[in-house]
Image (tube, rainbow, N blue to C red; front, side, top):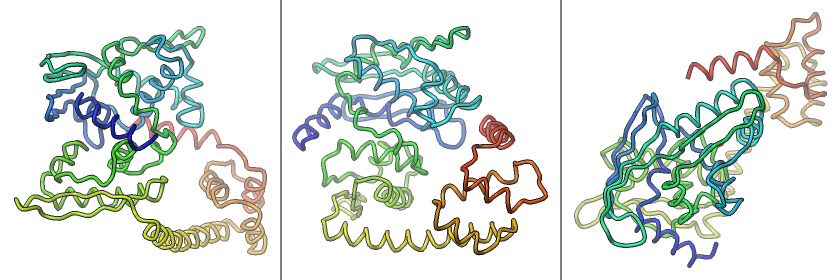
Length: 350
């Protein structure tokens, strides 16, 4: 998207005050409501569920919106199957992912928004109540899943459509929710960008009130953002004449970006050596010959070896454990049932 188009999109979002509901993410605890104030209005978002949606739920909502967008908004309904959603979002299909899809849809069905202010298409002050999803229907005989998006909410999304720019795979890989929220912002926010720290905290729905605490949250998030995406953001902060902390975001220059890349490559190289040594030690503990282990490093990626070492305790006992792990790595065995069952149990307890 061209800079001019980006700027127009951002202005429209700011004027319409539409971006905030999509930034809501539950982290720790069971927060059930949130209040957000802006120059054009106020939102009160609440849920009848045990907590607000989390990042996996948000990926699910983006996924639904993208399916409707692909059909040019001819319908606010999509018909699909849990299998397809689980495969596209989580990358694998199982009891947990099926359950997680339905749990996420229920969380969005339970969400409601109350808005007071200037909404869009005009300057009139309005009061609005709306939800996100109207219906979620699963036919257990056919496996068909019907999802109907709320008409009022879809009308907002049809006007902004910035979710099209979100790479769902990258969005899911962030370890920090703050990184994910900043990723959303910087996909449409022109740079350089200056914002008062407490206003940024509100935009990111952070609970921190003191600028120093806010900066502690932002700094590692920017590092993760730069490492995992093609965005290269420089973050700094300073005091203005009113002694307020101003956060400044700008694009790294080519020189700075190259220097940052070299620094990151050096860090990645050290991390690679740590991973390799850890895998080598694990293979030695299982009884694998050092020459065979060296050959495995030459022929196969570390991810495959780490995966099989993780699965190893869940495989059936054998008199030749070294041979078993080597064969599992070479043949790239799938996830053992015992491991899958354990993971599903852990995820259900969260």
